[in-house]
Image (tube, rainbow, N blue to C red; front, side):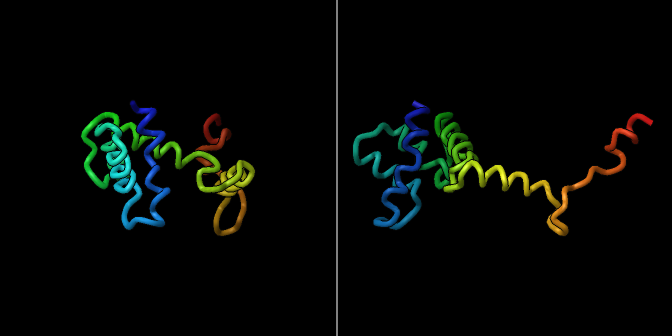
Length: 112
């Protein structure tokens, strides 16, 4: 059931250009209209907290949505750009230089 919820959780995005409202609510309404179980429809409508999650499947659907959004390519980002972005996040925003560890964290400070 959780796989089904996770698979269908963003189905409402296909209709957001035609129907006003949140893709989670739109998706849940669509699923109910086509005879999907209430448990799946609830998990879909609750995945962005538009309604309070009442089941473990709804909570796990929220978790799967979070994992999906965090993966490389989720925002039309290539793996190469993702890796470059991660590498850039280690740089100091002020100077563009790699950040340095504080003196307490250096091996010399720890071992004498």
